[in-house]
Length: 261
Image (cartoon, rainbow, N blue to C red; front, side, top):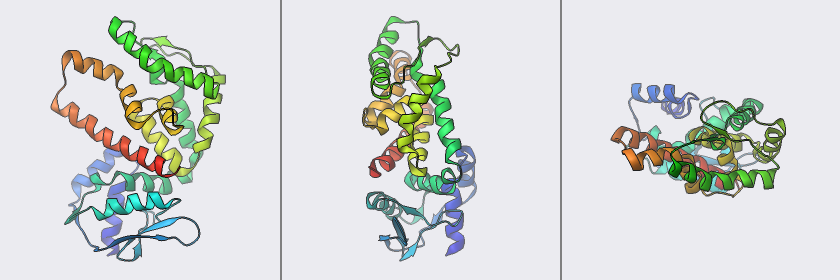
């Protein structure tokens, strides 16, 4: 059923998340059109996901292949868990892989450079000047990551109070870039870019990728300010849902990156 496959793939992987959500709302959810899901060695390198023995392809009709069996099995499980209908919102791993193959692979340098831009205005470098409790919490959670970057990467970032832009030394950005090069593959950059945009911190993304932080630790570090506000002022259901959706995206990017190790 190629037409259904094409429509579904487009909804799963549009590069603009707002447009992706609009596509998903406009299109009725497709009925599950396959019975069996499997994994097989792809022609050449990598592994493919099979639906009733047929290889999945990306929206641009490229082979939907990944470098490790572990990742292929995670993707197959994501397809297999779909019941009577196929819900694209429940398939974040597939979205990341489609984005890596159809998007990042075509211009890795642009994605690499975009992550570097985040490093130049990293969340961890902008500190509150009050209240004292928040300042202490930021120092306690963020300073060890900055110390790690300085010691492990040779990247020494400058801190600033408030939101006034602080230009970072070129040496710090260059040192960060050297660390990022170890993950400069389409899938690696897709995952790191996702984590960076979700957390607002290229430093947290690389610290996770290099094993300095767990997924949960990186997520908690990204929400020091928000959690402080929640503790003192509470939250609402809509904000909670938004954060939970972003957490699922974070977990997906982390799982893909972990499966490449």
